[in-house]
Image 1: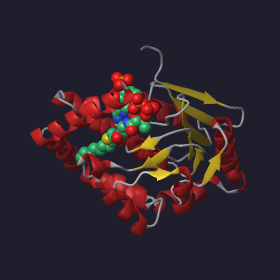
Image 2 (image 1 turned 60 degrees about the vertical axis):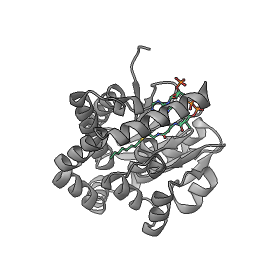
Image 3 (image 1 turned 120 degrees about the vertical axis):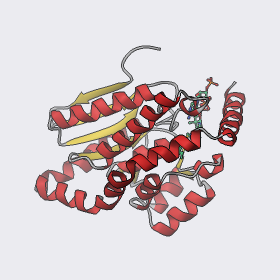
Image 4 (image 1 turned 180 degrees about the horizontal axis):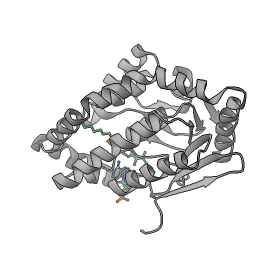
Amino acid sequence: SSGPLVDTAVDNEGIATVTMQRLPVNSLNLDLLQAMDKALDEVTKNKCKGMILTSASPTVFSAGLDIMEMYKPDMKRVETFWNTLQEVWIKLFGSSFITAAAINGHAPAGGCLLAMSCEYRVMMSGKYSIGLNETALGIVAPNWFMHTMVNTIPQRQAELALTTARMFSVDEALKVGLIDETATDKADAVAKCKQFIKKFDKIPPLARFLTKQKIREAPLKWMMDNRTQDTQEFLMFVGHPKVQKSLEMYIQALKQKGG
Ligand code: CO8
């Protein structure tokens, strides 16, 4: 399919809505990640006060990393893929502008990571789930995925969720604090994200940003100090025959479920 993978629309109050539109499930391949990286740069360049991240799919926010990027990968491309994911996370988690996620559907793994990297989450009610399910796939979530979760929910809850690969229902996510509000539909979710961003009209922007920066400093510093090693670990991981075997089985299971 062609067309832009990300749409960015800025309203008259300086709030950007960034919509992922790699249908059907916004699985994060290199192209989508590069488009997101560009969109985040644009939001910065346009001096937007806030950004809402959402999806063009009616039922999926993002299915997480595109498994096809990791299956029998071209090693050069998969390295760029991982570096771009790191870059998107650095720009989103560490952004100077206010961020909110309007989660209009499922948000497993990398989808949950994107949502947790924002400062506020509103999730559409329904039979959707959100969480880091890596251990169920035999994957150890990278440290910075874990740091991002611990920045969102209490450490003990994060430990339980990560070790058990827990996928939370919308109500469970609300209860544990993985999301902040529920919404009746996408429009309601976006409206609630806007309300959150507008709360800061009363707060001096520099104090707000420096406070965010300080509270998020440790995970960002971890990334700066360990970025190369993190990439090496990922490359070793995808290069491992056992990992390739489990990815293959997972892809088959996904296809059987859908087909
Ligand atoms: N990657 C590639 N393709 C995918 C993915 C994905 N993550 N998710 C779904 N698809 C494909 C399906 O195979 C299907 O393809 P086809 O039409 O050819 O059969 C198509 O997208 C539609 O999928 P579904 O029919 O399953 O759509 P549903 O609307 O029924 O369900 C879900 C949507 C709930 C999102 C479901 O697709 C799902 O659970 N997907 C898998 C999500 C997942 O497990 N993601 C984990 C990715 S790993 C990750 O993000 C972090 C890895 C960190 C690595 C660290 C290494 C050290």
